[in-house]
Image 1 (cartoon, rainbow, N blue to C red):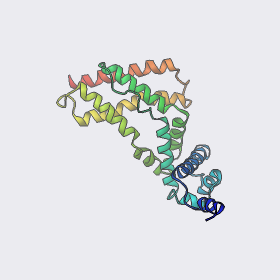
Image 2: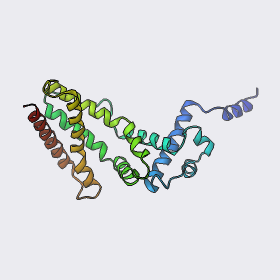
Image 3: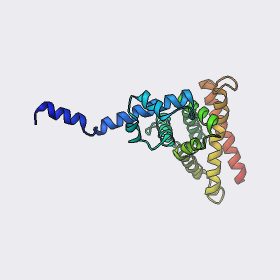
Image 4: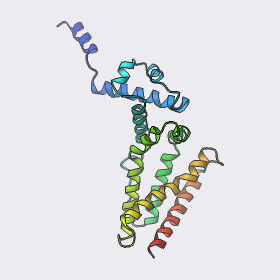
Length: 218
């Protein structure tokens, strides 16, 4: 086969894995921009395809529908704001310091522009589109955090003092305690907290949380 024809056949064949990944990333980046700018309800598949410069057929080759697209976009956002794997989570002998470090990592993720934008979007449209909440819940980021915190508590409290079920419940409450006020202030309910204020906040929440757990086991 002549070289020119071979090149033409290659261009007309299936994209390489790297090309397919780049194309998927382009679609997800376009979708994320539109979801945040226009909202979930007003974002159409046609608009996403146009913004990503792909055909609708190319889109449907990769995503079943808008709900699947949103779930993939959520996974991409959470992957981008999740702490790098090389950052230590549970190293150290002092439980309060460990929890303070985890609290700061949670805050850094929750208070990123994309983290805040996702929170606003889900809060604004989840009543009409419950699939938004399901997409966020199914990603597993919160579940992973709960498992890490529960494991930290296991180092301090035996099952007789704090059952696995109660450790998991306490871990979920810790995340709520850490995030709620700083997130609200970042969204306009008061002034956003400075880095120094966030560090003090993380330490106070860790101490208060541990005091509560110890009180339950006394």
